Length: 88
Image (cartoon, rainbow, N blue to C red; front, side, top):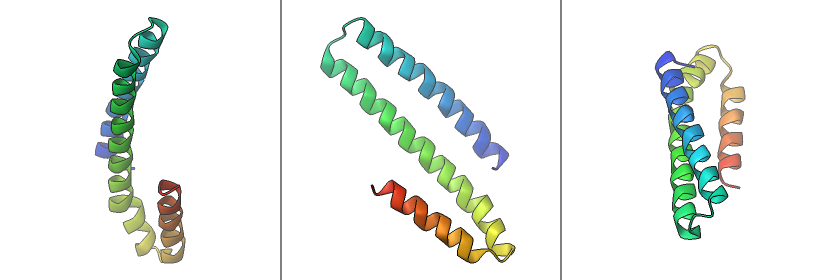
């Protein structure tokens, strides 16, 4: 993993952790359901951004490296697997 990608991913994960903790406190405090759902939507969007960041880093590093090493079939298989998982 590229160091910039790792650093950004860790920042996003820290943010997500705090945001999830806030949602937990909202549920424990009997917050209005719509307000909780707005926050869970924000968490989902943050996870999507994290995934996009990780995918970008993977394409720029691991995929390029794998192709250079002659592992095109393996790399393509992994990308197709990711695509399949994302579309479930």
